[in-house]
Length: 71
Image 1 (tube, one colour):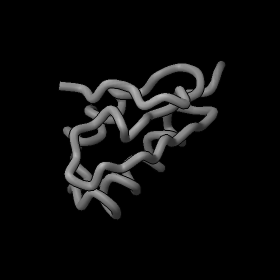
Image 2 (cartoon, rainbow, N blue to C red):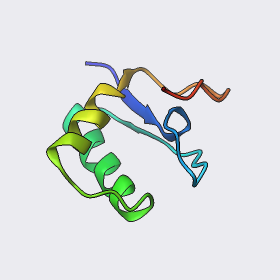
Image 3 (cartoon, one colour):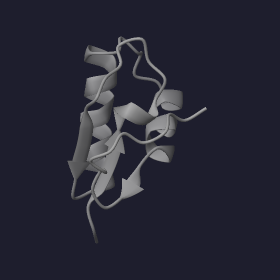
Image 4 (tube, rainbow, N blue to C red):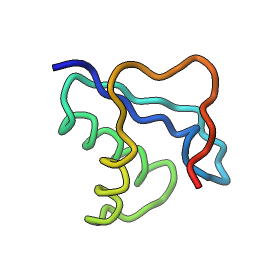
C-alpha cells in the first residue's frame, strides 16, 4: 500500500493554510487531518467532516506547486 496525503491548499479557507499531511495508512492520515481541522480551522469533529477529509485524500505525495482549490 502506498502513501496517502491531504493538502490544505485544496480547501477554501480564510486561514490560507499551506499544510499537507502524509501518512502510510488512511486511518492515520484521517486522525491527523481531523486534529488539524479541529485545532487550526476550528471545525467540529463530525461524520461529515471525516467524510469530506476522506474524499480529499490522494495517493502519493503532495505536489510542490499549490494545487487548485476545490469548489
